[in-house]
Image (cartoon, rainbow over all chains, first blue to last red; front, side, top):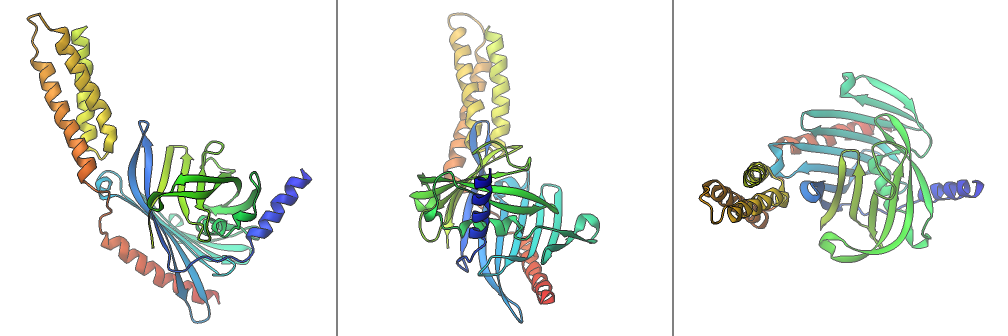
Length: 245
Length: 106
């Protein structure tokens, strides 16, 4: 138990170190959902980075966008926008925004990080603000995704686990990523590629099954998330890389 | 037996048409092909008898057309997102507001 805790702590410190994420990068994915045993394409998902300058500092703007293909818009329209403004070196977030439209459901929320306190604003509370405390190192889902990318997988052994606390819907969720070794997979537009395989788990009912939520990162310096498979309460889906810019 | 097969074929044909209209991709092939096979089987069962073959024939034609439509759509229609001006404007507006918030943080 003690060993496990030390390993977890070591990884938490390790991943909180400095990271290099390329600026002005755009990764596009084709999102598919399993219906009747067959994968049916549903939406385009993109992950984009760009620098944003203020009068005193330059932030790295991380943007995750999901948009249903036009053929689905009439039946179920999705326009999701998840944004995080982070320090380009430490990837520590300063501002997070979630603006989603899924069918008839719409939600907008904003977190402003002030040390270990988050100032949250949500349209469901008519724009009222709420302050809540988080643990040091806790971050939103977008920043956590990029933080994961910054890990040096080449130094990891299969079975090694590292922890991160993710903030979602004004709550903290302990999450972990278990390194499962290397695997050659069909990496969408990149063709067959050797990838680092990671199993994601979180203490939440939003993710299902053991080793059912997997991310494959290309085993090179760019560590591009090439293939993502997920299992959520309403079904199983995947994101396949369709373009890299 | 023949009647039951025709009823099941009709049910699959209807599901097939609905799936063909909806953007279900190649998933629509499943009910269409099942309707096709069952309708052919119904004709096979009525061979030599004077029973009407009109209904199974209609199911075959409808299911075959639906199958062709699904195959054609999957080969010719690309997965594309429609340009959404409102969404793009929302993103631009959002970034402007974010810069203001970030300025306030310093």
